[in-house]
Amino acid sequence: MSNKQTTTDVILVGAGIMSATLGTLLKELAPDWKIKVFEKLDKPGLESSNEWNNAGTGHSALCELNYTPEKDGVIDTTKAINVNEQFQLSRQFWSYLVDQGRIADPTEFIMPIPHISMVQGADKVEFLKKRFAALKDNHLFEGMEFSEDPETLKEWFPLIMNGRTSQSPIAATRIESGTDVNFGSLTRILMDSFEKQPGVEATYNATVQDVKQNADGLWEVKVKTADGKLEYVTSKFVFLGAGGGSLHLLQKTGIPESKHVGGFPVSGLWLVCNNQEVIDQHHGKVYSTAEVGAPPMSVPHLDTRYIDGKKSLLFGPFGGFSPKFLKTGSNMDLINSVKPNNILTLLACGAKEMGLTKYLVQQVMLNKEQRVDELRKFVPEAKDSEWEIVVAGQRVQVIKDTEKGGKGTLQFGTEVITGAGGSVAALLGASPGASTAVKVMLDVMSKCFPEQMPEWEPKIKEMIPSYGQKLIDNPELFKELHAASNKSLKLHD
Image (tube, rainbow, N blue to C red; front, side):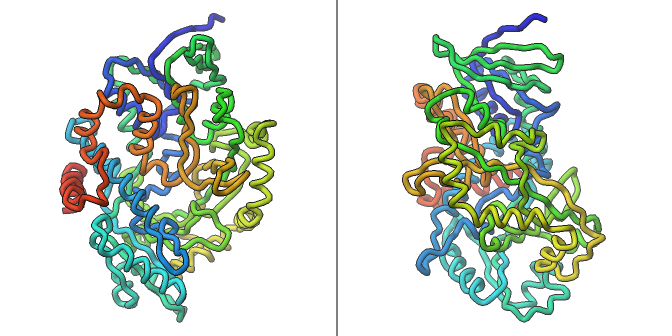
């Protein structure tokens, strides 16, 4: 059996939304570069990016209440503004690709849908009023409405109001200009276009077994292909965008930045409606507040989604636990990620996060009837027979030592770890993830290609006109670009 040895300029591990975005950006900026993609599965976008494995909200912080925590009676809007700004970059880049003919029909991956925050209970209604007051005059959240009038709420979400007997106060905010993004579809569209570019080669059913740096500074990636043969590929730059699989590969690099980093896998389940009449009664993404002790990714929401060209209705996600780092991973993933250099970090996190552990154990123990009982807090008239359980994706939350949180701090969010002078980068973490892929990949490029960035900047600004500027500080630019992307993406008027 002969081993194949090749060289390339860039290696992308994983064919999800992150690699698809980075590859597309790099090919626009450096068309002569050779890029190889290795994906363990037989198609792109089957793991974390898949439409059944993520929320698809097009996270713009319009309705996610965990992005606006209340501190000492004041609503902190910092994260909501940052996430919204980052999503605008994604919209601009997708619009550019539509205008260039790289994306033929944007309705295959993005659809207009109202984003709604709904709360129950007097204290939460008070919180939502404060949040509304903090955001309503902000141009990034233009058009936000607040109501606690039952008749108005019945217009906004009849399915949630029908049959409601609880006397507990209920209130909601709504923004009509939200979106539903099918990241699985978008990943497939981007990869299909990207693979047609000269100098790009994507290999599927290819497992990356090792990543090591040679004496000359180049990275060598060992790949096992579908026919069982080994391929050794050397490159100046490697991006590990393999979802939960990135942590193991990052550890194999041996870079100092990979030490004292661990991962905690969290799985999820959706309840999916199978009755079209019920599906048609709801139109919106309705987010509420998480249970005490629940991780932010388990915020309950009742979501209109467009999947496989038709309207769907999902509720969840329910938290779960599996030692796998990917849905298609191994039950040994968690154990294999424990190393001498991160065991104290992991133990410290375990001691701190007893509440999360307890929450996940409770969630795992729920049967279908109990899950539908949770759904009835949203949809009082929900029937067991009209909802089915679908397993959502695996997310690996990053655990690391931080100045603020101390040893073993569990990170909720998306993390990029770079090392070896920017010649290797790994993407770890979870939400807001896919929605902010363009911003995250621009950050990767800034860290990893600092010498090229000045030369690339004019082209980046052509693709992403607000690059280098803050839309929060420039209402006119925001309105202009938002209107332009609405038109290109066939969204709202």
